[in-house]
Image 1 (cartoon, one colour):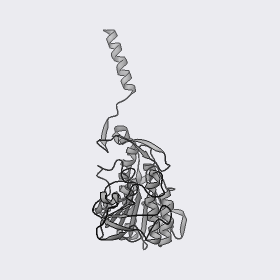
Image 2 (image 1 turned 180 degrees about the horizontal axis):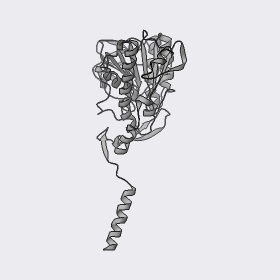
Image 3 (image 1 turned 90 degrees about the vertical axis):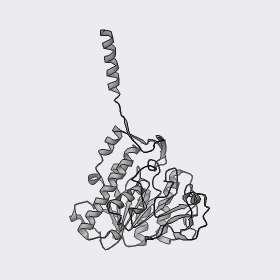
Image 4 (image 1 turned 90 degrees about the horizontal axis):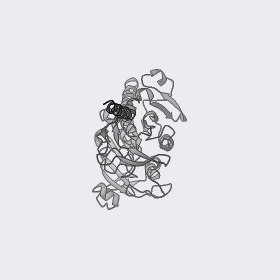
Length: 335
């Protein structure tokens, strides 16, 4: 009897050394593990099924306290000025002007304020128009190698950025009609989360190759109703980028998967924001209307109607799915 008790004690002790960490949410019912390429080109094996410990990690992220807002204007195009929710004093010390349009930029997974996404778009916007550019550094939420937690943090960060925008509007008199919110990868979906939490009133939302892993069955992904006009540009569809339509207008350059001049998924993924940056300078990218995203991916698009991709001004009232071709190197536009 004592021997049996001793064996049970050893078994109990061993099981206690390896605590049970149950799965409580599945971002993809059929696929659990997947390799996802990071911004450094490295492949990371990610788990799309969230356990108790994953949720606990995400809960430690506090975007109201940890998100950092960097303001760039034509008066300070290379050195940012800080903005803090609830701190009206800083507004009197920086170059923010509520009479100008405001651009809000949201980086993706494992990125931060120094992301190529920001390096491309900040100077492009300031060159094209006298605007406020606010770069959101949410790396405290996006910088974790735990992809499940980063997806969860996309939601809480978006809700926090929406609170920041509503606070900024309340103290400065700025209008939601003066906003353009753009996000890359996870940031593409976050743009939608921000928009819907500001009541769908923001004038222009752009998702630049919004993330695919963990989002196909995710209710928080970008929706057409999240802004007055929403646009999505797909450059690595079905791999790093979302495959289906997300917005009022969805563009599939070169079929949306493999971009000319690229030899990696990360290069394809990044082309979305390089195309957009060029569109601010030259326009030039004209899409041909397609019947579905499948015909857009094959290039078999013969419907009547063209639409310019990207650009400074929202194409309010326009919608559809579009195909276009690009060059392999800058200038990317053929039009």
